[in-house]
Amino acid sequence: MSTVDPFACVGSVRNELIVAIFQKTGAFLSIVGSSLIVSDVAKKVRNGKETDPYQRIMVGLSTLDVLVSFFVLFLGTWMVPKETGWLWAVGNTSSCSAQGFFALFGGFGELLYQAAISLNILLLIVFGWKQERFSKKVEKPMHFIIIAFVLVLAIIPLAYETYNPGCGQCNITPLWGKCSTKDEGELCIVRGNEQVFTVILNIGGASILIVLIFCTVVMVWVYLHVRRQEMRNRRYNFGISNNADNHRESRRIRKILFLYTLSLYFAYLPFLLAVFIGGTISQSIADPLGPLLGFWNMLVYFLPNCLKYQRDHPGTWLVTAYFQVLRPAPCAWSPSGMCAGQKEELEDAPEMNFAKFNTTNEQPATIPVDSATQNNDLEESVNLKI
Image (cartoon, rainbow, N blue to C red; front, side, top):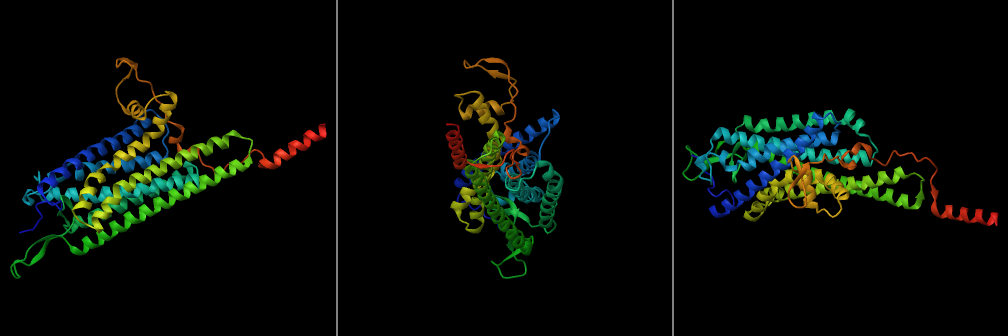
């Protein structure tokens, strides 16, 4: 007979109900957000438009997020064996193993894809790569390594029956129960492998820390690089407007990277605290915030188009711009609330295509001239004419 906490680490059945409602709501928002990203890229492919590695990375990230959000966070205790006595638990051992598999496969995968976004932007902005070069040299091996790594990692606990109920859902944990051959009250592992649990737990915690540190370092690196370019532009006059446009777009890409990193912190930092610190409070914070990663990514992904819509329609609120960009309705609404004809086809904002913008490999058309020197030369020329 196995022993399972009936209140799923949150202290009481009331807290369990509150956490379940928040978690399912967040998971639903995340599913919608990730599905919109996948739908946007799929629409480009159907219309014959070119997609770049950034958009394909977002498809991989969003697909895995849908798996995690639906099977782990939205279904939640519905896939947990009903013998646990948890709220709404109606599953069995097989559904529990399936939920644990998707939790590890999707959770690790979307974490690594978040790091891939940072890597893509780092190579474009700091090292001056083009998306074509990234696609040929990095993209295909990157997708293969991510999928193969998380697939192998998710299969190992499945083979050792280490996906079991733990803290409100099925994840990597050995199942403890009463020992039949030992003293009464002593517990033994009745299902699962403690060594597999320990190794996977350490790999998971280390991966989250490494990705958070990597994304943070990349964000700072990109910020400092663009900042140096801004200082260089102020000091020198290149005589070509294309440089100024590219640096402006680079700053926008820097902002997008910052927001992606922030969404990663919102989703994974509470989870990290819950794993290593534990306790009812940290678990209650992690459960509602963790499911929102897909929703945050959706807001960041469509932000450039929404800002472009605001520039094209002055006075529009950002919330209204998101509604106009995201809504699937076939008609555009007039200020009076009536349908005013076919919805206009919105073009992507330029900063959505990272391939066009990097600053390292730009070759100025003229030799840079210090602005102070340029002014002195102009004064001397005027004096000679006088």
